[in-house]
Length: 247
Image 1 (cartoon, rainbow, N blue to C red):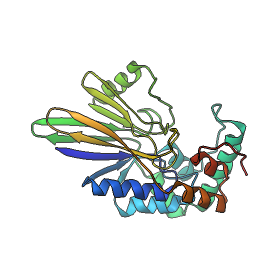
Image 2: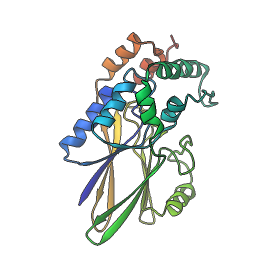
Image 3: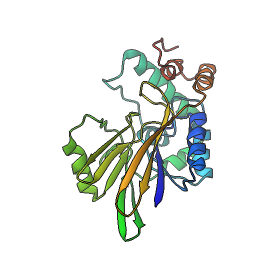
């Protein structure tokens, strides 16, 4: 049996990341992978990057990592309210200002995808890791997407499991002895409970068993630190699942 931990979308939330990493360690899981978006929306973007670097955790490039690494302009999204659009511009500008040059170089060199092959007994399992899809790190695929979309991704990648992030909404979908999985978000969950979320894959010779793990972390402390920073208060209210103004 082999266990693999996959997490995504830290978004500068170091306390949430530390809770997740501590939980992985308590479970005795050695194999750890990150699906990107280390930066934006909480004050610890540099610290989150340094944590990933210091632990030598394999990480792929999220859309926020790419934007900060290459100073890509922010484009408003139709799904965002005017309040979130304004806050998003300010928060991303904050990251562009404060993420160090060295850490921007690190982000710029992250791979776009990772394909894993684990052998358990006589069985080889192929696991495809993406931030959001095979072609893009900015495609929103939710649980209610048609099965055909995920089946095509599995077939194209020739994998038994595809694990993604980006939407900050966890799910597991099973069809034809294969899995499409979203582990949710470590630092900026969009789920009602706002818990830090990641997925554990348990591999044995006969099957793969996924489990989405959701954990409490000092959310109020994070919200207060956001309010003390130059990041818009919108993101503190978001973590609290409140509705407030940007400033």
